[in-house]
Length: 445
Image 1: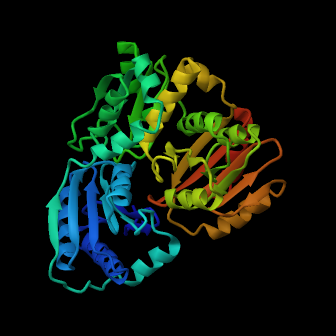
Image 2: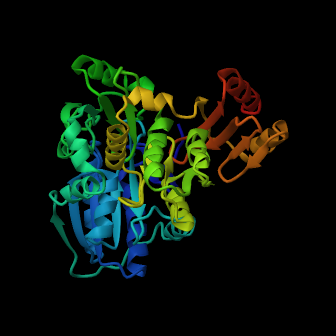
């Protein structure tokens, strides 16, 4: 276990009561308040997922921000993408989301966003870090109000930007696992607005996660069982703050999380071809789809904010992260599970095929994802790995990714949110992917 919380572009993360305490939370929120005061901000919106420590951290945020003179709106429990949508459209000058996203239940976190409702860039992060230990000026006039009803604006916006009437005609039978998290309300609401017959699993927003929060196949077998039991056309699984999404086909098979993004990209490119942006850890499946259309997949470092900035820079039609995060700027410029559900329902409606058939038609790779506990220095390891794979093309944007002429690749990188190193490889066949993992592992002690 590391002895301190991780504070990076994805926010502050730590184990509640150990590496993340009330004092640590207050110190970081105070630094953010100083940052906001320096930017002339006036209004801040707050939200949280359902982790049990969430109300404590929200109360700290309210105390700090109101004393600093801000008008604060507390929306209660709601998805991260909803918070960001509301910040942009209502509008607010800043926002705080209390969530550890997909991290294990013992974690919590504080996600901080800039005036444009983007994750902090490295310069903004450095500025806030420079304020740690400082207190914001006390300013009269601060206030707090609660508004838990404006979240429906997000659902309406998503529905209005897909072919809702065609989707409604299909009356899709859908199972959704909201993991007792922030998507408990809006996930089912979206599906109902699209005319679906909805079965909800783990829909109590009590933070008692029914399984490990990361939406991976190993954690979602009960979703597959329920899809088979009720004869559903598709299943959806959200993570605790509902920015990530994984799907289950009509046979009850959990689809590799990389393919969720690929399906969304396939849908968008069929209607509006253009460039896309994905991070350096995302499967080549999505890249192949855009190359088929004659356009480019631009790669960025891992982290939602990095992908968002890449989408803006390259005027991309869609982008995301293969871990289950689709970013569709037409609807919401952040990872959004509601957008993912709507786009995939639109895809299966338009193509008139079963989920399994469409997944099977995607460019196919074998993807192996491993991770180990790691708190050491990564620089020397990366240098050795670069020498080991000198026959490949090296990308050092985030850790190291090495691409090879046979369309295989391997990557080593430290997590932004946990004390782990990820070692991933992808290839046309499993033996090649395993070989790359084995060669990379030699240099990790």
